[in-house]
Length: 325
Image (cartoon, rainbow, N blue to C red; front, side, top):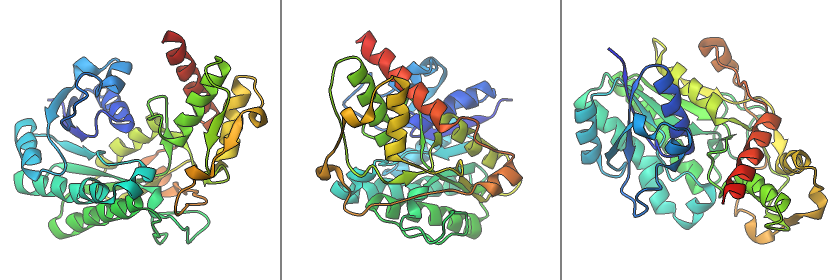
């Protein structure tokens, strides 16, 4: 019989790519989708990948453990991937309580639903490199001390440690992927990479003349979400649960990432990029650089898509979207 997977956040970037990947592996894929007034557009990423009709969506919410228990009882999953969260760092300062309830406590709700219904389900938690924050080591590994710098990062840190706790307390197969920044054409336009590629595409097509950004000297370790969801699956195929850093081991500034995008369309970055102090964060994470040696050695995972390839793919997708409109 085919394995059954249940994904929270299935309508997001990672959830959509993970669903596509699991379908290619022969899984029966189910997703949890919270109630939204935007009925009909919430699954647009699934439709963009051409898999909307191949997954089954269930109405539930990470803040409501009873709804999670109901769906787990109905679906009877072999694997549970918790990708749902309030995942926009900037919003976490404006909505810290929502962020805590969903991104932090929601993890406990998911784990508790599994513990009470079927503790044998393998569980994946989407942890984040933002937990490292004010970095304590030049290259961050699974043993690097955490120093979160936003309500989002603090919430993710709780989710990470409660996953470790349930693994150790109840013997659950619960793993966390400490994923560094990963992007794609499915990334929301509020995130900086997509803001850049969408902005560059608009400028190229004559729909805008400038791209406004905040701190362009911040550096991140960027990979492609399509590569990173493969790592999630690999973690749940291991005999023992564990935590893994997933990264490219290359850091790039926002400025240089912008330059890649502008170069792709043959335009000069200096003629269009505007620095807006209003877009700076209250507390910035200056640089992140992940060491994914453990994932390479134990999972056999390596990133396959370069930053340049990813940015070109994103710009091209945005050009096509805007042209179609």
